[in-house]
Image (cartoon, rainbow, N blue to C red):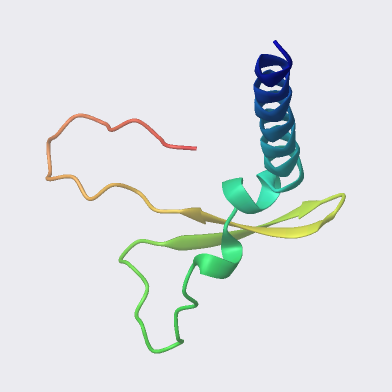
Length: 81
């Protein structure tokens, strides 16, 4: 009986530690900015790319608008935000 309590308590402790790590590391998991390679200035931008700077309460934010390259006469495409 005591062995079963130790196993359950150990499993519960491991689960709580795992949940705590996920809580404290959630920003790095969702936004891995240090793992994304930085592109050099020599790479050309895609055709039709429009950079837009938005002023927010926390500072300037860069947004991109890139219209789809559709053949003439085709139907409009949805926007991805």
